[in-house]
Image (cartoon, rainbow, N blue to C red; front, top):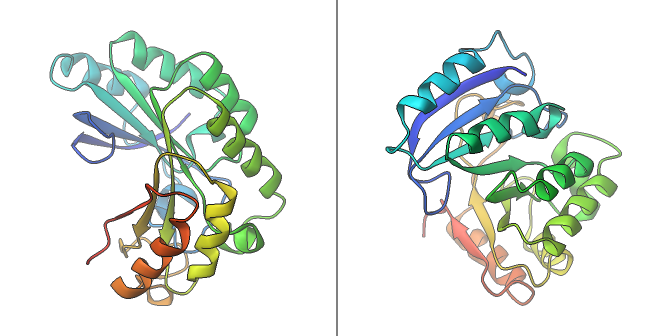
Amino acid sequence: MKLGGLQKMTLLDFPGRVACTVFTAGCNFRCPFCHNSSLVVSPAAPEFSQDDFFAFLRKRQGLLDGVAVTGGEPLLHPDMPELLEKIRALGFAVKLDTNGAFPERLRAVLEADLADYVAMDVKNSREKYEQTAGATGILPRVEESVALLMAGKTPFEFRTTLVDELHEPEDFAAIGRWIAGTERYFIQGFVDSGDILAGGERFHAASPEKAKACLEAVRPFVPNAQLRGVEA
């Protein structure tokens, strides 16, 4: 497994934890608005080895209390459970980010209790899912992952990155019906990182007014839904 980057401290990526964020390389989706395209399309040699990563964690024991594992798509890698187990063995809580395309691997992580928190992207309504994810034949697996999290005991959140050109309020009403009853759902603001898969000039953040309309569309089904990273 290639490790493509490390953010040495974050107060944002893992709710309630002082954490670091480790990035895995490679993804099976090609979301055109992806802000980590260099990790997705042509991941270079890893910036550091797993040995270096775990040496870093050992030095941060007592200073950090969590590790957020993101990508790319972490569950693209069959040996992800081994990485999570090693992180947990050092006393760190684990947050796992996933696009939901590998429900069998997600199930293995959940059943082995290797994640303390899971954040899963819900890219769009079912009708627009493949267009938004840039991949075909994925919806049944994503639906299975949604069901796994909602039926399980591991704390989790669903989240959707709101892109002006790809989402409308009615899409969020459809998402709300899909994940109705979930406790934590966030509509995230799109940010042009300068590393956008399809070029940042093609995509834009929605206006605050549109973001609020999308939030209102989902709240009848998910009353606790919130905006994240959206200017009011």
